[in-house]
Image (tube, rainbow, N blue to C red; front, side):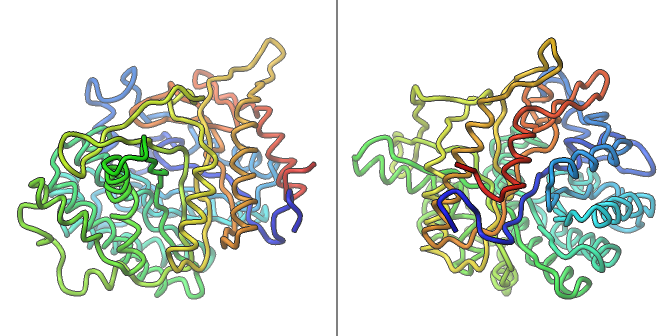
Length: 450
């Protein structure tokens, strides 16, 4: 391996999620999800946007797969919409939903593109939320049953599975911060949700292995580099607390270490765990820690934090540094540091970078070309961080750019653009950006070039 070349067999792909691109929210028996409800609640999304139509991928997926093939992607990470399979979250299976994804998998395989299927990317059937949502243990049990249905239907052809995408977002962002569906702000509920999300991962993993022999199964966690604002002890303690809140609370249980003791103590002291870890039942932690074949890492930026008034608490510090359209700091060094830390501190057999990308608002010029040079710079710098991590011994086996298409960006509606392909939402016309062709060259040469 040279400085600019990736190892032989390195997996190159692109990623999407169902609610962000599919549209067809009421088509062919699909049930309502929490994001359908949330996005139709006034004030919850920018401009009142929803995923009702999104990129109309439900009807245009063959054209989108042609773009994937043109990109030269060897793999495609996409999610299955739980409400398309089980409209009420459990019980009666919607065959039309299964058939939709079966057709997609078959077409990908015909094109020589390996499907990496994510079972949950945030579109919980609303009936399950009404029955308690992720703070309720029954939701984890329902998820395991859903995983069994999908694995039985697709497990003979799909051999790479991601159970849950970003448990921090599923629990904290959704039940504590309230910025994502269902929009609750309840610390104890969020912590219960975090446990049941991880439990759902472990329970689903067992179902997948039963129905898809030889499959590789993992989970995708979102990470952010936690950096103290100064060398003071207080800021270092704040950075460790933020790291515990965002990273270790989810990573440690998956890796068999249980919930971090410092975070449990801090949450109890703050009143966030009034009944302690009462939601943890005997055997739960073993289920969560069942060995996985890989860890999916989603990385975009870092968080610089300083001490807050309460000991162990933190507050973000905004630095005058280059930012994306999302306002996120561009910090590729954080990716290198994160990957090296994961390799040194945790026993991980394989890592995929399951999401990495950037939002810029570049639009087609008069000649129809989308000149998004800043995205190319971002991708180049982060892929260089990947190369340095591999050289340091990190078992990084693949990279999935977020995202193939501009899409519905959750609470931001359609105001952000992460895609390698520009989408005109009025006409649904797709225009590959300059970064699409740059990434295609990277894939073709399996490296960054000179």
